[in-house]
Every structure is written in C-alpha cells, then in structure tokens.
Length: 415
Ligand code: GDP
Image (cartoon, rainbow, N blue to C red; front, side):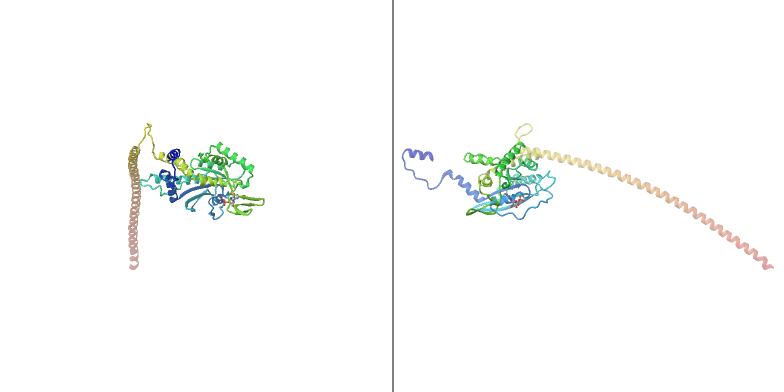
C-alpha cells in the first residue's frame, strides 16, 4: 500500500487518509484483544534472607499491601510460601503468583538450603509436562505455575557475595531466570554501591553463574544496554508516603533526607519495574518455556526412555519408541514373573524342609516322652508288686501272730 501511495504521489493523484486500519496490519490488534480477554499470569520467586525486604519490594512493585506479619528467624529448615493474587489495572487482569523463601539463611547448617527451591521449580515443570503428555490436554486452561523469574536478594554488605548466594544461584541458574538485586540499597553509599555491583558481577562470572540476559532489541538497544549495565539492580522498597517539597512520594524518610523509590537517581527500582513489567515480562516467560522448561522436559523424557535418534543415529518415530518400550516392558514383566515363580518354588521347598525338620523334632520328642512314660509305668508296676508282696507278707505275719495267740490262750483255760 505504501508503494501505491508513493506512485500516486508521484503521479500527483490526491490521496485520502484512511479512517481505519484494514488488511493484515490488523493482526497485532487481534493479539492485543485476545491477550486482554485471556488476562496475564506471571510467577515470581523471591529468594533471600529473612527480613531482607522481599515482601516490601513486591508490595512496592505492584502497589499493594500483601504483607501480613513479620517473618520469624526460627524456622528449622528453609520453606516456601506461595501466594496468589488477582490484580487489575485499567482493563488488564493479572494473575500474580509470588513465592517467597521462608527461613532462608537462618540455619547453622545451610548446606541444602537450595533444595526446597529446586524441588518447587521442578514440581511446577512436572505439572506442565504431565499436562502436555495427556492425550486430551488443555494447556490454555491450565494455570501455568512455572516460575518465570527469580528475584535473588543480595544482602547490602558492600563487600561480596556470601557462599550461600553463590551455591544457590549456581544450582538455580539452569532452572530459572535469575535477576540479582541488591536489597536495601539505601544502606550503601553511592561509590560503595558501584564497587559492590562490579564485585558481584565479577564473582558471578568467575563462578560461571548465568543470570538473566536482558535481550538487546534494536528499538530499545540503548536503554537495554543501560539496564544490563545496571545489574544487579540496587533496589529500595517502601510503601510509606513521604513529603517531597509540595508533593508526596513513596520513599523512606531519614534524619538527613528522603529517599524516593520512584526516583531513578536514588535507586534502580524503576529500572527493575520497567524491565519486569513493561518491557521483559513476555521475554521472561518465553525464556522460561524455551530454555529452562525444555531442559527439564528433555532430561525427564530421556530418563523415561524417549529419544529423537536411535543408537545408530537414525531418527526414531514415536511408534518405534513405543513399540520398543512395550517390548522391553513385556520382557521385563516376563523376567519378573519367572523370578517370582522361582522364588515361590524355592520358598515352598524351604518351608517343606522346615516342616520336615519340625516334624522330626516332634517325633523325637514324642519318642523321648514315651520312653520316660514307659519307664515310669514300669517303675510303678515294680513298686505295686513290691507293695502287694509286702501286704501278703503282712497278712501272713498277722495270721501267724493270731494263730500263736490262740495257742497261748488254750493252756491257760485248761488250767
Ligand atoms: P522479608 O522478610 O524479606 O519479606 O522482609 P520485609 O519486607 O518484611 O522487610 C523487613 C524490614 O526491612 C521491614 O522493617 C522493612 O520496612 C525493612 N525494609 C524493607 N525494604 C527496605 C529497604 O529497601 N531499605 C531499608 N532500609 N529497609 C527496608
């Protein structure tokens, strides 16, 4: 159409401005309309020590008041708190999920502090994968809970990263887009902050930790470069309204002055907000899907036994893999059945032998008792016989005695 207009201009033909767009230049409008209708979802993971300012920063970012009560420092292990919010700004609906670490950095043994965080990220990937593998899947309706960005809160020591920061970021960098933040940046002076930022970046690079790379697109390459140079963002959070001249602003009031969170010369809060919400939210989501989720998916499917190519480097079809898996599974079942049968026969034999042994023992015991019984009976018979003889002898003695007495009584009566 532009060419047409040019030709008409050259031919001095009067052009009328179009009242509305038509043709395929309307495509973007359809996307905008559909996105507004569907609404947006965004999942943020905040990792940082207790009291470092995670809740305050989230409130400041979304202009809300989500915080309920102060977090405790006495958790025996690291946990995660998941909160979901439905936010509206003009006609845009946002389903926001904020996941915050609880008790991070509070234990003496910090060895496995990253474990619950990794487990949470993997669980969300797994839920998505399971939906994807269903025959009847509904990925559009599914609430995608995969973590799109991890805001890593670095303590404003002005010195260097702690080993806990390095270990956790190293474990997380292949699973999530990490955006490092210097928390409570108002507690570090401007010159110290610059040195601290470069120290952090060199430590991250030195330890091979991949953080989120803000993509350079042509239109905004200048501002993107300045954003990239600002990493890690030095942020300050506050929902307090403070007086600045005749107006009020969100900030923190100090005896020596006011720090405005929305003032770019005071801190990087605005840069972070622009990057997260205005320019890079879609990129963060896409990066999560294309890189981090793909990595997880690839690892899981390989573990299950799927592969794109066979051992001979020839492409494998899904049907072939399924056939091979089925065959392998049925062979495995047969092997297992055979093993169970053998085990069963073996157990029966063992039990039989056990029963025979017990039977023999019982038989021996019975013979032994029988023998004792016979001996006892014999002994009793002997005693009985002796007793009978004694009784006979006694009666005999008694009869003799009575006969004797009778004889002695006869002469006396004769006298
Ligand atoms: P969380 O436990 O990480 O969620 O920390 P909170 O957001 O509850 O903040 C803990 C304390 O730090 C609160 O008293 C906040 O007012 C304070 N705080 C939060 N953000 C900042 C900040 O940027 N600068 C300063 N100086 N204090 C902050």
